[in-house]
Amino acid sequence: MELQELKDKLTSEKQSFDFSEEDGGVYIRNKRYDTKIHASYEAIEKHDWNTIKAQTVAGRDVNHITRVTGYFTIVEGWNKGKIGELRDRYKSQVK
Image (cartoon, rainbow, N blue to C red; front, top):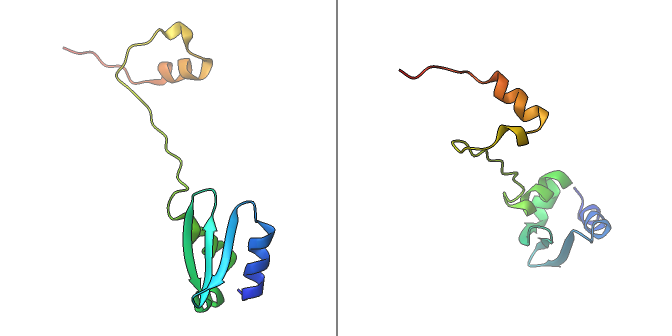
């Protein structure tokens, strides 16, 4: 990617990114994740926008999903999907 192309991209997405050119490259701050990286001129030349943008996320763009099991609840309050899951569960007898 060309340096000017990167600057244009960052300027067009100024609601998400701040940047400054110094120390032989560009400092890029991702406002959403409050991360800051330094991309050297060599790194900018070697990589495309998606790769550079991914570095600004610093592993913070992760969805966390959890399911709590082992608790008691009243089944009448469940929606259709949850009741369907209940019907599909494997049932066994404890001896």
